[in-house]
Amino acid sequence: MNFSKLALAAALSIIGSSALAVGADEAAKLGGELTPVGAEKAGNADGTIPAWTGGITKAPAGFKEGDHYPNPFAGEKAKFTISASNMGQYAANLTAGQQALLKKYPTWKMNVYPTHRTAAYPQAIYEASKANATRVKLAPGGNGFDGASVGVPFPIPKTGVEPMLNHITAYRGDSFAVSNQQVAVTTGGSYTPVRFEYEYDFHYNNLRKSPADREDNKLTNFLQTVTAPARLAGQVLLIHEYINQIKNPRQAWSYNPGQRRVRLAPNVAYDNPGVAADGLRTNDDFTLFNGATDRYNWTLVGKKEIYVPYNSYDLGSNKIKISDIIRPGHINPDHARYELHRVWVVEAKLKSGTSHIYSRRTFYIDEDSWTILATDAYDGRGQLWRVAEQHVLQAYDIPGINPTAEVHHDLQSGRYLAMGLVNEESKVYTRISRNASDFSPSGLRSMGTR
Image 1 (cartoon, rainbow, N blue to C red):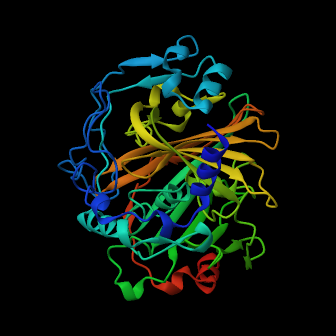
Image 2: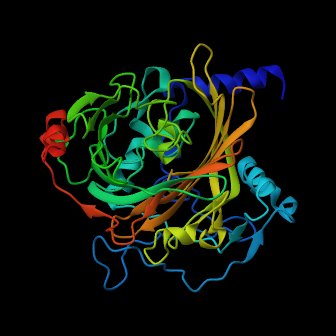
């Protein structure tokens, strides 16, 4: 590539959307040759990726809210397995991080199953996404957008930051509670489970709230409570999360049961360590990326066909114990499912004059759901440091693609963090209805002192 093309590519990575707006003719492809949220509807040339035909939109008979999701593909067998010995023949469809894991851990492998494009969303999300294509504009600096409160903001992305904003605002449901656990695993395989209860009260993409009840620029109210082990139980974190965090910075408060006080928590952002993660992930690693986008320059590389974790119903099941999942070095690969999907590849490079422990990051974003499925993160020397994968499933009662297990590998220490693991006795997804005051610092104080 010559210098002029390089300069153009750099400009396109940071230019405002007004110069790269989607025209009406291009937007008309949504629902036609493109799915309503912007993926290619057709399959690939050799048929290993099928056409999208609407996804899974209904729960099976007998399913109740809060149940664990039964696997609609339980009878399927893996087509083949990728291991350290044969990875060379599949390298074109593997991330740099996956190749590094295969090389580092001879016991890690990838069981590849038939591809099922299960992603589906409510009709209101589809209608809003199509309208957003021509009306949504990037905010100054590219750190948010204007013109939408529902739907995929950029179903036909033109710049690198747009798929990231699609991921951040992806539809996960309205207001709901989940409970799960995470483990920071030593090189020898030992761990202590940390149990969490989460509540999400979405403003963006909340189909049950009236427009008057949705705060401008707010993404969600997020409430996290630690319930085990005893030494951590009772810690509560409240976050008011905004889309454009230059306009409205993230607000966070914590409650410590030992001090019985609510305090501001300004460090719950960027590369500060995640809660109870033993230093194995940053705050903006949660869901593989969240929060402000202002510290990186974002480049839209294009699409690739990659073997990614998908339809991970087994990892989201209460039939598998945590002791069956956790192994030294990595999770038990026999419980993971990989499929070939088209993903958007986005490169993030740290801006001059800013700081972050990751100098560069590569994101692999599902075209059907705008969910980040894998990331590669590089240290200040430019060496691959951390590799993360997000295992997802189609939650048919929402409906939408939702995360289940999220795994962060530290290649340098040989340790890893597994998040989102199911509590065997817990409910997976239950709708909640709370007053706004419940998601306030005073509400946090009353929760902690009950």
